[in-house]
Length: 284
Image (tube, rainbow, N blue to C red; front, side, top):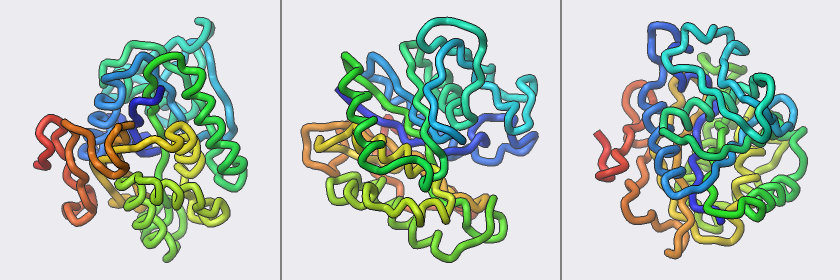
């Protein structure tokens, strides 16, 4: 039974120390941590769904090292988490996005069972939306108890001159539509996410496309209460942090005790939206 999903950005900058002395995305980090903490609160197990160069399901002793992005473990502001997935064995370093999720889970205090599912980062190579959705449904069916997902992925990396990749004028409209749908999460919104063209998502470097298809399959036809906690495009890539909770109320209604959505209109001069306080539903 799926109880909740934390939607967190695909960036190592969430982990302190990755950007050096300058803390690049503190507000986005706080929002991602809030999403993860709320998602796992009622869960018996967690599945991380994250983009990687190749699809995989790493097992063994997973180390949340970020040396793949050039940051030695000693320079990170958080201890490097080690999580046993399946049978304990030699240390394995998963994809960067998976490692970031392991950091967030550790900081949120999660010490229960974890499974890591890595999907192809490039939407054009990730397989069909239907196949990915079927994977999500299978994850829930095999959980055997209340399950939370930590779903890693971001929108386009082609926003303006500071973007990781060349600017593309199509990115603005696509990410505006995606953000609105991720914040609403009713059945119509989920159908639009499911129908997002993989070719366009690939051209615009949308790393969350495959992860979100898995999420849609895990949710199925259930009602979802969605909360957008933060949105950021300050470094040229579009990131959101959000919380989806399965609920008995009609789709689009936020569950009791969860803050209302934070819109892009609340963004400050850095482009980061204010982070709502999960306990009060207010933004600072």
